[in-house]
Image 1: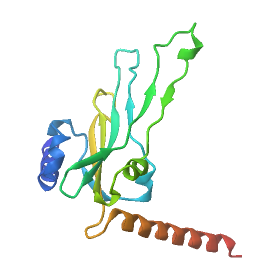
Image 2: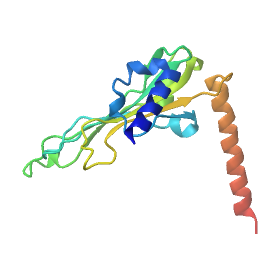
Image 3: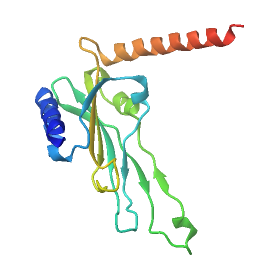
Amino acid sequence: MKEALYARVEAFLEEFPFLERYVVKVERFSERPTVQRVDLDLMDRYGWTDVWTRRNRYGEMGSVRFLLIGNDGQELGEAKPHNVVRSKFSLWRPSTWFREDVSGETVYEAIQKLDDPNRVHYVLEINDMWDRRPDFDPDYGLKVTLHKVPSGRSLSDWLAQIQEIAKGELRGELTKVNEV
């Protein structure tokens, strides 16, 4: 079973060799890497790092990263991660009862910070649950999604087109709702 997964991962890395600097061990993958089109939902997502560890014997940590990559495989930037911090819990200190969120930026905000957003051809999503236990947690391991701008399109043209599609879908839904 793992041999098929490893073969798919190796084929993926062969097709996109620039990803090898982000994915070191094929054995860490928990599912096959995928390629998807860049969409509007992706623009609202943000990376996160879990910088606190549960105080039990199976502490867990992980991260989700969004890297902006050019057509030549060069890294152009990264969405600044959203951190969640939790102090060591103390019943006598109410300030430790809740998590503190440290704001990050969305993929769209990270793209807008670039000098030329149209240089972005890929957004690499790396979901790494590196300290979860495979026998207890099915989310253990590495999941990679390469979000791609369609060939021959610039990022801004593609986003404008899918925004128009979204408007059309909304108009269609409104027409159905307004029908008697």
